[in-house]
Image (tube, rainbow, N blue to C red; front, side):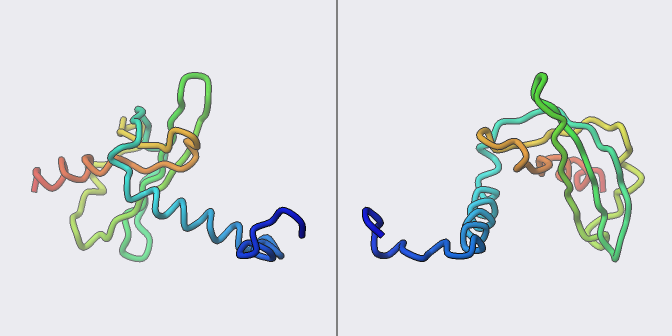
Length: 116
């Protein structure tokens, strides 16, 4: 294959490798969530499943959106289901180039821990 770097030839032969690298990039980028821009979001669902508190949320960036996300925490850490309500405003961090990659700002959990 003319013009290709030999080490990359055949790397994406079935498309699965490309998705693997996308997933790896997404996971690594979550390590830097504190550097991501913030947006106000809204909790859309709170439920407990298999000892996990699951919070689903949505947010928009101007006319762009809504984007959605999900966060979960072990119920053994704290019992906060009464403190999280549908419609509650939360801070969401998002990747600037792709807001569909986002995370609930972890400071929400700090405020619940301080109440214990």
